[in-house]
Structure formats: C-alpha cells, structure tokens
Image (cartoon, rainbow, N blue to C red; front, top):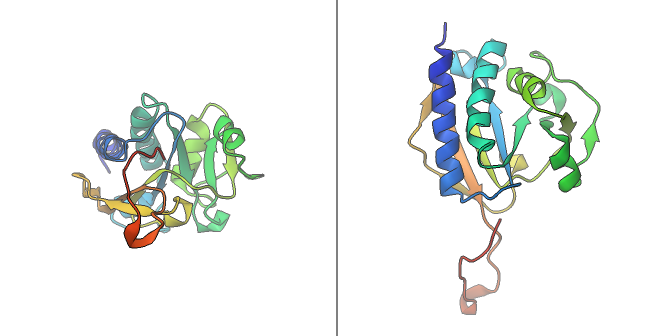
Length: 186
C-alpha cells in the first residue's frame, strides 16, 4: 500500500515549487494530470486508486488554495481529457461546461477526487492554464497556454510516476530588432 501522507507531501512540495517558479498570481489556473496507476508502479489506466487520487488532490489544494489559484484536474482519455474546475473559474475564463461526473474508470481517480473536493465543481471541455503539473505522463500540454516552458522541479517522482512541470509565457514577436523585457503577467 502506498504511503498516502508521503504522496500528499510530495505533491504539495512540487506544486508549491512550480507556483513560485512560474510566479503565478491569484485567479490563474494550474492544471494537473495524474495517473494513480503510475504512482503505484502500474501501467497507466490499469490500477486506478481513489485513495491515491484523494492524496494527490489534497497536496494540490494545500498548495493552490493559499495562493488563491484555480486548480484544474484533467480527466482521463475516456472523457476526452476534459477538466474538473471550480464553477467560478469556468465563468471567469468563459469555459465550455460539459455534462458529466467523473468516476475512477471514466474520468480517473484524480478527477473523481477533485470533483468531490471542490466547492462548486464543473467539468469543462478544455482550457489554457498558466502552468501545469503532470504526474505519470498523462499529457497535459493540450491544456497549457502557448508558450510552454519546462520547469525542472526538485521532486522528480511521486511513487513510481515521473513528474513533469511547465510554466507559460506570452509569445515573443518582432524578430531580431525587437526588445523583450519580462514585465508581462500571465
């Protein structure tokens, strides 16, 4: 059995480091994808664990709530990688809400745990987040704003799952004569 407290602590540490490196601001979105199967050392999609999903969500919320960020939890491929997010974020970002309630085998344990833990959860078809955390190579890139920039975190694995992170920045335009000063706010 997995050490759920250790999973929560590692997820929180990874998310907090990403929030700091990405310089995320209140009301921005951090997207997370997670394979609980991979955390447990199994092939993605084969051993979904709601307990592990709850531990991951707990760590993510412990990092995002104090930072006043919206957390988006990616569903599995059976729900076309839709995302669970707070209703307020869906309104703020004008996101397309879809009708479904995630379950461990149709949406995944992360999304199921997020739907239970959020105050007013909705599921949206897609979004463009300001940063992302991918635990177990679930491919969250489709939900990041252009341009995604890899972030190398201190936490390299959670359980047996590799951890990948990214922040985003606005595209640089103008060519060789352009002057770029990093004063933007995602």
